[in-house]
Length: 471
Ligand code: 6LW
Image (tube, rainbow, N blue to C red):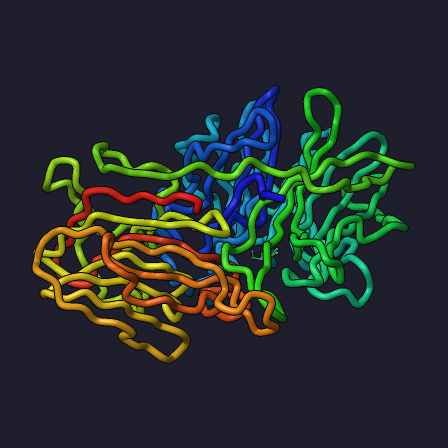
């Protein structure tokens, strides 16, 4: 059962214009921010751009930054509202564009919208409503970001439920529906809904709440929640939502972050009923030969783009800015891991610096194979422990570095890891095989997933190509 957008692509929000669907996801500390996808069938999605092409000017810890966008199309224009989580708390901003591939407008700040996970909806009188986790609601002027009234409380989900969040407000038939996530974004995650006569309620909860949850089931897809609804041109309804694919022994580890899934929705007695997941098409291989001057939109860096030059034709050169992946700013260019089993490789020339191929969760959790100064090392950083787990002398020449996942060493064991990660130089035996659980969200905490990328630790490091494929 595949996601429709595999890999760390959480908090999906969707809209339709004619036969075209557009979807936005959270991106946290990664740059550029807020990937935008396009589809014609809801199953096959292509990334067409990113909303935030400028780095944030505020301090953003890992798993803070860009949280939970809502994308809507209104009056010929796309609108995207989002929370930027900073060390000082959430800042909500609104972008607009006539082309979802970009460029998007500069962000309009919404100083009167507290909370996170803002939603956008327009009523019959063109009034623009923002509903945010808390749950609060306010009418705004979307061009200036000003509040047009005081924020008010609205339906806050099932009494006693953890973390009511991710509100989305819709007009369907005679009712306004307020759909939210609750139960927390872990195994208890769920989607609930209420309806009322007006955008601000009063709201009556659905007697069948939660309308989506996999908590306490054997389902291989868990943590289902944070959903958005869309109606197709043929009148059918669909839900996109985030979920994870945990593996290994107890308690189960998910390593790809929260991914975007799809399910059909039918309406019974005026309430949405969510069907079984529609499996997506597995992502194809990804390769970049660095022949183009523009980077493909799925390439992400940490917080901002490092200095990247094309000083050798058809190579990419990364210029170091932090001494290792332990640092907040590092010259890193990565691609999200999207399969349960995969392999990535890069051809590196480390004659002008040290650098390599890494699997990153955050500054405190990453594994990498690093070349330079006549040696290759495999380094593991797990929490406060950093260790060189293998070292090998090499002649200073270009080489292909590889990382691939493998099966748990004792499958079926209560403590079995979700996978292993094996690092090496192509054509030689693996230098190190490491336990994959330490690069899972259950260990690292936070909201992201594995990102595989090239990096520079010192000097200028040249890369001829990068490829990634499912095994
Ligand atoms: C997001 C919240 C959530 O703001 O996780 O699963 C937070 N849902 O709605 C970060 O993605």
